[in-house]
Image 1: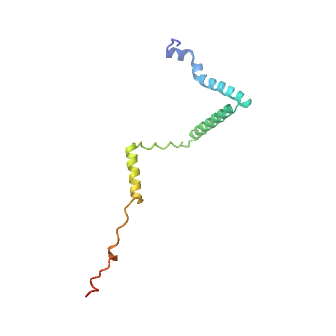
Image 2: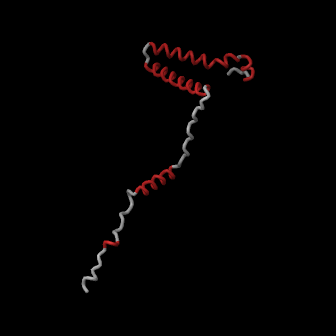
Image 3: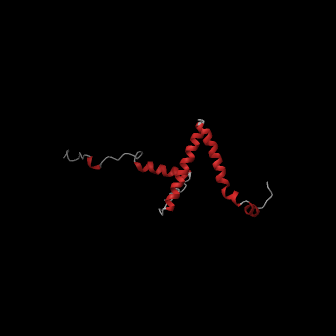
Length: 118
C-alpha cells in the first residue's frame, strides 16, 4: 500500500497511468515471443490467440470508424426454470403423437345382421 490518494497519483503520474498497461503488455508479449522462438508450444498458442483477438478487435474498430454499424449481439434468451423446461418438453412429446392412444374403430364398418333373418 502506497498511502497516496487517487487525485495525487493521477496528478503525479499521468503518463504512467496512460501508457502503463500498454508497456506491460508489450513486455509480456516480448517474453512470449522469445519463448515461442525457442519452440515453446504453449507460448506459440498463446501468441496466436492474442493475435487473433487483437485482429478481431481492430476489425471491429475499423468498422466503427468506417461508419458501418457494428451488429449488436442478440439478446440472451430468457432463463427458464427446471420445472417449466420439463413441462414444455412433456407438452412437446404429448403433442407429437408418439404416445397418443390409437384411434377407435370406425363405426361404419359394423355390419347389421338383423336384416338377413327376415
